[in-house]
Every structure is written in C-alpha cells, then in structure tokens.
Length: 204
Length: 352
Image (cartoon, rainbow over all chains, first blue to last red):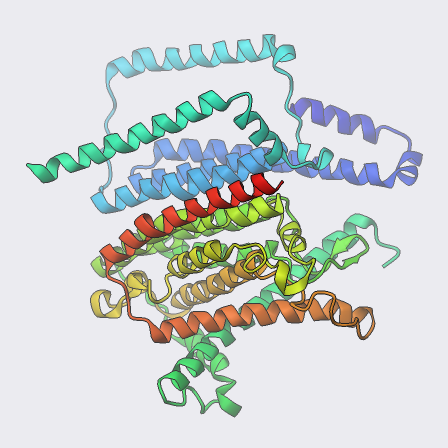
C-alpha cells in the first residue's frame, strides 16, 4: 500500500507544470496524501518501537505504557486509513479502559522489576524458527492473495468523507447480528466468571 | 491574503486559532480559580481574595508568579521519568479536548472555520477518548511519587474516572441518537430550530441524560462532592502530594481545564451550544460582526453558568464515602443512563 502511494505521487510530479496551475485542488490533495504517508511511516515506526520496548523493558509499568503507545499509534494508522470510528474506539476502549486496568493492577500489586533470565532452551530452539516460519507463511499468503484481499487506501479519510459509523452499525445490526450478540454474551459470561472467582475467597 | 495558497492560509489560520484558543483557555482557567475563591467566599460569608488589584482581580497573576518562582522539589526515590511525565500528560489531555469544541456559529474565512480548531465527524468520541487518556496522568503521578497517600489518591481517582466514564458516555447516547451524528457542529445545529424549546435538555426530553451527564462529569473531573482523590482529611493532598511549583500548577490547571471542557460539552450537547435561547424571535441587529460575536456571547454565558454550578455544588455538598461513590455510579447512574437510551430510541422509532 505504501508502494502504491509513492508510485502515484511520483507519477503526478512527473506531469508538466501546467497541471498545477490548472488543477490546484488536486495538487493540494496530493500534498495531503504525502503528509498521510509521512504520518503512516512515523506511527508505524512508533508502533514497532513500542512493541519492542514492551519486550525489552524490565519494569511491568514501563511495559504496560509501551503497550499504550502501540495502541495509540495503531489508532492513528486506522485514522489515516479512513476508519475514524475504529480509531476513536481503539483509543477509548483499549488505551482508555483496558490498559488503565492493566496499569491499575500493576500499581495495586506493586510489582517490582523482573529478574532477567536467559530464558528456557526450548524457547530458543522452537521459538525463533517458529516465529520465522509464521512470518514467512503470513507474508506468502498476503503477497500471493493480494488481489483477492484488496489493498487498503492510505488517506481514505480525505477521499470519501462519508461517516463510516452508519456503515459499521448497518453491518453489525443486520449481516453480523448473530456473531455480535454472541460476542456480547461471551463477555457477559466472562464478567460473571470473574464475579464468581472473586466471591469464592470471601465465603471461606 | 490573496498571494497565499489555500494550504498556507489554512495552516496560518490554524496556528493562529490554536494560539488564541490556548491563551483564552489558560486565562479562563486562571480566572475560574479566582471566581471559585470569590464565590465560595461570599457563600461562606467572607470576602475571598480582595487585596491584589481592584476586587482581587490580579490574584491569578500573583498566584502564577508564586508558583513559577517556588523551588521545584523532586523527592529522592521517585520514578523520575514518569514523575515528570505525569503532570504533562494530565495538562495536555485537558487542553487537547478543547480543540474540537465549536464555540461560535459557522463562520468561514477562505474556507477555514474560524470558531472551531478542528471540525471532526467523530468530535464527541475524540473528547471522550482524550479524557480517558487523561487518567494516565493521575494514575502515574500517584504511583511514581513513591508515597502511600499519593498512591491511594491516584488509585481512587483512576477507579472513579474509569467507572464514571461509562455512565458519562452512555448518558450522551440519547443526544447522539437525536442528532444522528457524532459531529459536535451537527449536534448543535439539530437544536437551533426554535431556540430554547428545541434544546435537548427541554424539547428533546433529554433531562434524564443531562442529569446523569452532570453528575458523572463532577466525578470525572474529581470535583466535590466526588473529590475523594484529594480528600485532605484522609490523604493529605491525594495524588499530587509530592508535587511542587509548576508541576503542581500543571495538575491544578488540568483540573480546571477539565471543568471548562465538561462545561463546554454540556453546553454543546444539551443547551444548544452557541445558539441563542430566543431562536429567531429577536430581530438581527447590527451587521455581520455582531452576528458572528453574539453566538460566542451565548456560548460563554452558558459555560459560565455551568462553571458557577460547579462552584455552587462544591460549597454546598459534603463529600461522598468511597463505597457510596462506587455504588452510586454502578448501581444507579449506569442503569438510569441505559434506560434513557432504551426509552429515547423507542420513542424515536415509534415517531419516525
């Protein structure tokens, strides 16, 4: 998707200068697309850096905060792809609620620094080849099936300014109604389970 | 400005808007503090600050100078990076959410909206999202201070904010249903038809949603009667016990900026934003300038009313107990907000 975007902007700049004078608005749009590309690169890098930092940090609070950075950068990426509702939901639900609970729990337990171990031998022997295999498999699938999967459009927010909240709710409450309701029941079951687990200690 | 391209005009005007709004918000924060001290003084039968300048009007300036010049202490065993970052997160989040608030009627200049920094189609969600990030400032400040009072205060504050965020978000759904949009400008426009009577709080029958919003907003900003995180008698000063000088001032400013933000949201969603309460009854006097300024006057008047209400409640009601606070949020406000959604959508489905 990045390659596509760069190619198209190059194509545009190779046009004779006359075009800029004739069609200012499309030039503006193109510069906005370049900014979108810059945003994408910055926040994609930030997301990867945050994920690495999550693994490398010794203190659990720092790891949790790196995860918040990852979530927020993902939200910006969603936003730049034109999914503004998903971006807002990502910030509110993941960074604003779930990660706050993570941080809260770490604070309550007052967890100290982790001891740095070399890790188990099995993890080294199976983990690294396994990770490489999964990465290769996924990239093979994405590359070979790229036509059927379709490509995401960077800066989608600029091109079709229609609200995707209406579209999402349309899909959620018609075509995907059953999975949606089943998921909510699943979450309810999880909450009840948590209540039962918390109650057990009081009675004893 | 004819020799500038559209993008340059947009960029310059945006920077100008940000600077002006930031200055006005920070001044408003300083003077809200003075307002609070004056009004509470009067309500408790005393004068309030009256020595610095006429009627004590220069008191915020004196306070600012004092806070700037105080020694900036950092205790030895704090978690330094987080200790420094926490007040910045709190203040930044409090100030960012102002950027999607439309504080005047739609007035465009070279295609740029003058009275709103960013007109987003998920503006309401942005405010909710930024507010929920603000919890980190408080949570981290308490934990990184390495002080048990600060930790207890921040635990109270973050659990309270996470719990009341639910009721707060759900109380707004009725309004969103009526407007059919999350764009704040559209929500305001849906209430401008017949002045006072088409405001959501009256004609829209969202009074229940409004009450739930108002109560949760008090809890969300950690204001009295929900100011347990800073209960002096139990926790010294709560999460900012270890902070001094400008770092303390940043928490202080964040609290008041949050007050202004929730007042703005209440105005926009339930009281018709910048629209006049008289609708089109009053004849349009003056030229285009008055037509642009008058909505801002109404907006500021409504926000001022909510700020006054905040202060009034603070000087009237005693503090909740912690279990009462949690029970009230989860067992009363949340079901009421949900019932409001069900009834509103039912009525809308039956009528439409």
